[in-house]
Image (cartoon, rainbow, N blue to C red):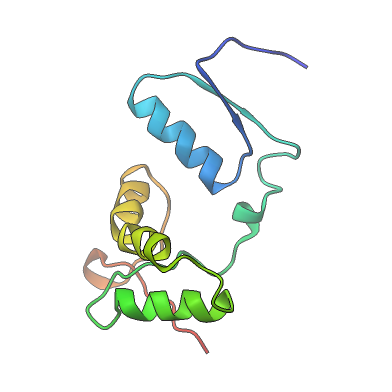
Length: 116
């Protein structure tokens, strides 16, 4: 095992850990990512459902909040959930700018995922 000096140690190589590393890199802060498995053997790498975010006029933050409440059986903190949900579009835009390959439809708009 090789160790490197860096400013921040990130434990976990899923989307949260990798996003944290990218944010730190934007501020010229070096980081080391520690993972218990190879980078392609993570829940984020295996995810098939896309990212839940309000990205079109026929979607709403309130519907996402409702879906989150149902999925959690009412155990969420509504204000924290709404903060996460309302930041979704800016996070998707940032990930897109970082080069994350999202499916797009005509005119460069993100491709919606239709449930059911």
